[in-house]
Length: 166
Image (cartoon, rainbow, N blue to C red):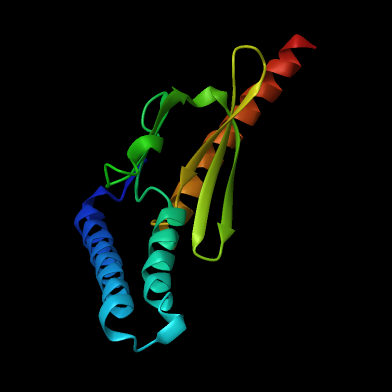
């Protein structure tokens, strides 16, 4: 199964541009308020608060572009940001399906995170994190279905392997 929201990149770019413009206009309004107008008095900081909160919310939502591919023998995950300033945490992971142990999707109001637990060579568990905040409910449901299918298949093969060893 393939899942991607890359076709919505122009919309996300538009939203980030609007928030950037609001942020710049807030700074300009703050400077003008302090130096020229004095309408708000001591409460001029409110002009900076709203744009700053919008920027923080977008930052907390995480990386908007999510791609998932479970075709073949490997699972591919990509989670990218559209801004070059914030792209230091781009995630691109590919691993065999049999390494997937479990997954967890955490919903916190408007924030959604995916945690993937995979086994490593030294029998440790590695946790991979992805942002799903920009995916629709249907896309998250499809992702859950696909990952559940892989986890169940892995559990069945592990049970068969354990039965053969006994």
